[in-house]
Length: 185
Image (cartoon, rainbow, N blue to C red; front, side, top):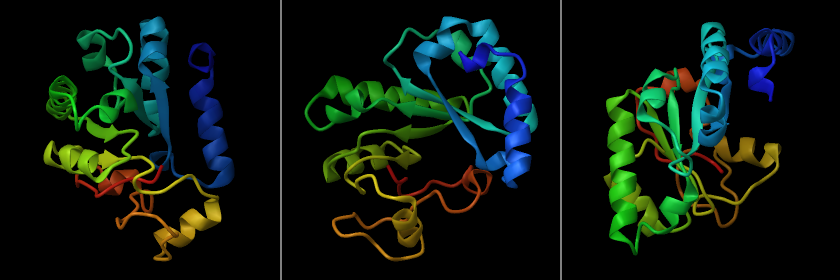
């Protein structure tokens, strides 16, 4: 509903200024199904957010009924592959084929790709071989309080967490061109 409200970008810009956060540090996620409900309103809101420097990710990609035309026309920076595809990567050829196609398509459109729901080393390895840009999931860590996440980013790895470098430190814009080992869940 917020996407259809007038003044959304202005409210976000004001909040970012009030809290001293650069717009390039904010990534708003919109699910594929919501993006396709009212494409005209969605595109208007996303363009307004883009003008103030806020990034957009299409979440749960592959679970809705999106048109490739609209995917092409939305000024998104990132596409998130739904965990339902990631879950079957190790056992099902069709899941691997779909994820590989989505990664290639997204990269061809200049989008970064995040795979959600990575829970095993096998899934991680398959996605890395497909050149997926970022990975999220319990394989890397369980949800944690903000102070524990910051401590981890500064080198204090939580018990049971996988070895990798969290990608949330630094500006998203700073890492937009370089692959990262993983993203915290």
